Length: 196
Image 1: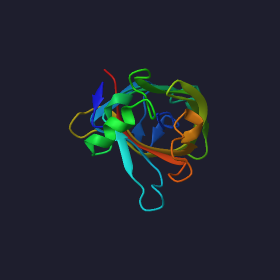
Image 2 (image 1 turned 135 degrees about the vertical axis):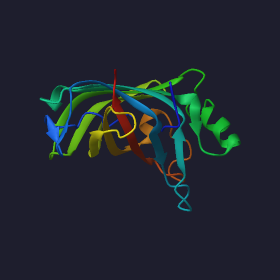
Image 3 (image 1 turned 30 degrees about the vertical axis):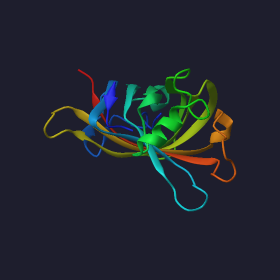
Image 4 (image 1 turned 120 degrees about the vertical axis):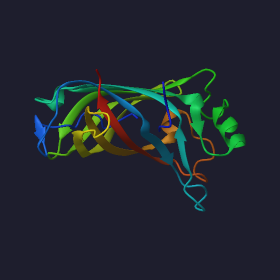
């Protein structure tokens, strides 16, 4: 499990081609660099604000095919109980039966089903997102920020951002809609390193 996150869930398979910016992009397994990974979601709170809520524990398994990115895969497993709104009472509320019901549904997962490159550094990544026992397809707009050898770790690294918007009510999280917004924007920013 990884602390200090933040799914995908995730734009983890858009590393296109064998070389980007002069840096080799070896195929194989990549894992989250455990101090630079974030998954957050935001929504409209009665029009007054857009809270930023995240998760503190998750794992990522990326299998990169650098020669054919469409054959790359990613699996993400988030510990739903690690939800973090920065307000302890609200975290307890979000863990309850009315919301994520983490006692019965302890994991949020994403598993990719396809990758479509839209440029050398952007892609649309489709996959199945499971929240509170409900599985639905989602599409992430993903962007490769940087591909390089980490100057201290001396391993191949990928920096990626991704986002998507979904209806929370479609995942059994429809309390207070429409007073509290149904549209939820998920934002991901991660650094991945080549596994040994």
